[in-house]
Image (cartoon, rainbow, N blue to C red):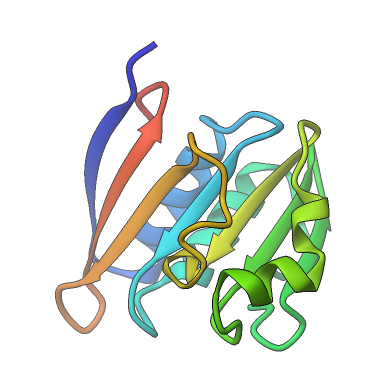
Length: 146
């Protein structure tokens, strides 16, 4: 099946959460989503929506200092933040690669910091800030339209 390149616009955090919920509907166990964008672009807000769409009721927080947060819903979700990592070697040394598997969904913020660590076939979401609350989300690698 051919992957789609999709652009979405968000005018507020609620739109971003809603987009995350829609993305969750396209994910299956084994999915890896690579999130990129500058600080404050809405990566964790999008993760909140994805988690909600996966039936997770816990409050989602950024794992900037812990590197990984784990949540349980319809499927186990690992939320990884690579911001504090110094690159692929550092990512490898954390042992996080052991979390990737066919029965979990993995979301990686700051994926651009670890370009060689994620397998091919990841779903990519790049976020561009276009205004105080507005964002453009460019998605690739999804196998169905959300």
